[in-house]
Length: 346
Image (cartoon, rainbow, N blue to C red; front, side, top):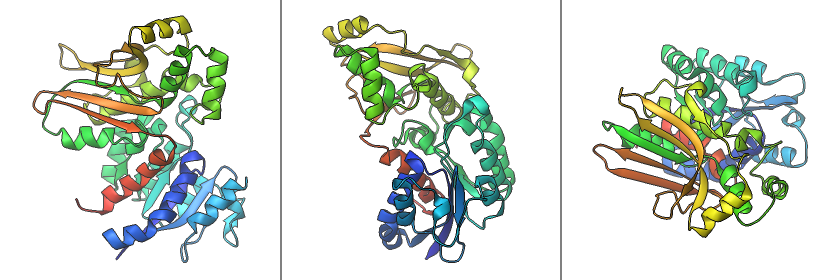
């Protein structure tokens, strides 16, 4: 049996649900893979808990968070004077799971520094936090190679959909002529409500109530989230050293409901489409914009809580993958997928 010691940074929507997944799947992982995943440390914005001997109970952490508390209140081993940087710098662990919020406005911190520290200590990293990959994709990969650590980030693109794994592994040897993705769930949800005749104010409110829109919604609705995911796809799958500045970006906030309704009457459905199209010079032209998709388009039938990706290749044909994600659980479970990729042979 292989024991893998985990430290989880961030206990919001994804971190808390990952704890539940870890609790629910523990016995299955033991039976199927002889793999014992032990959570030895965890941190949120108010403190941390660390027990390298006995480990932490994921179910206990879930209860603390559901009750509005902090992991610093964990019995006997919780500390309010110990935050994520100190935990990552000192913990004895095999894998750091970095699930703090995306924060591109502040240079992807604190997630970027957390990942740097972990890799420099030779610890593997699995993260659904797209910020550090957008800001420092090449640097982090070089750092991982230098310290013989693994860096996995499947959850940074399209929630639980393995869009990155499909592109990186299953399309090896191919030239991707065109990539199209609907990697953001929120924008489709809002545009469908607008097409139904809902006002912008009501659509935003319903999206918040459904848990698909956070804050003022600008990160999603102005297209920044989709653009960040396109940058990661470009770097990871297309080997295109792209940054956010390379993406021609148009969000959905300027769309009038009448326009969406007219498209619906023509049998089309608007989606915020991220595109990478091969250019004459061999590079890729990157764009994010709301596009009316016909039912004949591979992504034209996406529902309000679905995301998808299309790869058009030279030798493998055109491959489409779609996920239905009614809750954040699939996004949280990508950290488990990444850990299994590190330790389980196919």
